[in-house]
Structure formats: structure tokens, C-alpha cells
Length: 188
Image (cartoon, rainbow, N blue to C red):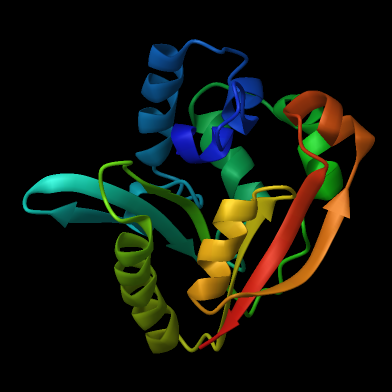
């Protein structure tokens, strides 16, 4: 989650949510967040882990936005002792966060280790996640990437996603170094 949220930047959304840039501390918080009783989109049960010859190759999160809402995420953070003030710290993100149709499966936190072929690993993880989505009645999936993430966009388009829209904000650019976020979608 940490690596994906930073997307080749020094800081990502979790640095602001947990008010620390210390990687070890963030990993501890994210591990706790992934195991809360409240099943937010960051809960471990939403993740697929890819292995190649017994080695960790990549991860992918797939979740239902009608179930894993912002309110549920806030509840999970409250379990860890945080309050809703985190929303002020991520206000720049909230300005550009895309609206997700509640009937759309969401793919997030996709990351593949450098030593593995990114396309092949992502393709298999997405295939497995979309199988779950289809069984639950979903007919489309979305993901979001930062504007300017050319390589990521090319990979997703090769996997069958297409551009839907984007949101930009100067505040987001100041905080995260990118113009904003774009949504990509795939029909199942």
C-alpha cells in the first residue's frame, strides 16, 4: 500500500493520514489498518498477492465501493485511535478524488516488484480479481492513476482499460507533485 500510494514520489496519502514520513512507522500503521475489525478498502481480505516461484511478485487490491466507503475507512482509522481530522490533511487528495459508481469494481494499490515482468503479473492479478467481481455481479472495473504516470497508463491500456476522465488541482500539485488523478475503466 505504501509503495503504491507514493507512486515513485517521496510522499503519498498515508504519509499525511498518519502524520509521519517514517517508512517503518507507516508500515506498522498500514499493517494495523489492514487488520482492523472494520473492513475498509485497505483490509487484507481485499488483496491478492502474486508469487512467482515462491517469491512475492506483486499485490493488488480489489473492492466494492458500495461497501468500502469513506465512512468505513474513517471507522477503521478511529479503531486505530485517529479521528476525522485526517481529512483536513488529505484535502488536496479529496479535491481530485474521482466519483466512483457504486456498481463498479475498484482496483487499487497495484504494485509489482522490479525484478518481475510487470504486465504479466498485473494481468494475472487483475484476471483473478475480476473473476471475483463478475461473480458478485459487477460488469465494469475502474482504477485511478496520477496524471503524468505515462508508463502506468500504457500498461493499463494494454490490459484493456480506457481513459474516462481526470480531475486537476493546484493544491494537489503542490502537495503531491502531480496535476491530479485520472480514471481508467474496463468493461468485464
